[in-house]
Image 1: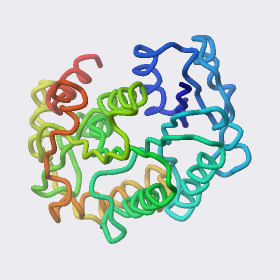
Image 2: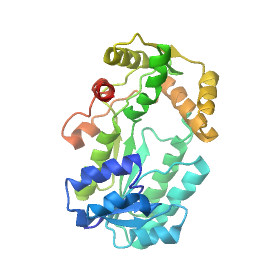
Image 3: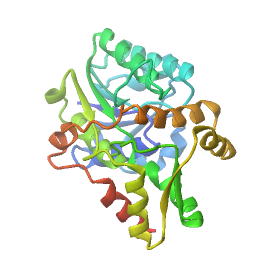
Image 4: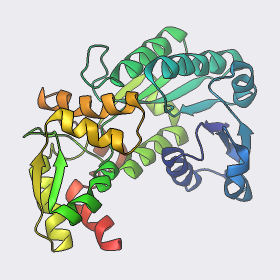
Length: 289
């Protein structure tokens, strides 16, 4: 049974490939990448690499040819583009004869969410359900890895800044989510037509995150609750596209509405263990640095 991972050279795809490679033979794995030249290390492991581009349906049908189950990793773009790309990928998978798709969605996907990217995933989930394909939908909570982006500024200013208020967010390490995807790819029958809510072990506040960073680094760091407009200005100064600025800012608005503080046990059930806690993840990452 051939298993394909899209976006195989991206952060999530790379981790999913690593976890899957430890479970099934390389000859059963296919990696799809927009730029196959960046996948030489993958090919060196005996994994077939195919060119794939969500903007090109014919090319995606070629990438999906002979594939039994495909992990479709959400793309990076504005809402209109990503909705179109995801619809193209699902159509191509069906046309090519893929039997089962696994999709990386987001926790609590809604068209009316303050987190603007949520609407993309709500649309894609609906398209998948209407396609007639067997599916597994992974509603991933937010990567704990993203919290590391604010550490350099915190070490410089003694403030870990975000417009988060007292909201709790169920962050989870990306590698745990990628391992869950690999487990499902390796044994898809057990997860047919299932939707999983994949969260961390607790809803953690940014006050707590700042305290963890302080403990791990030995620095005096506190949480600074920024106004949204100030935070958006900082994001723009980093050169982020406007759709990303609005989405990231909206994530915190949604969190303050209580959208991302529910803890589910699906991740632990699939992994056979609890996912790594944010505290352990941050301490491990910062001690490595």
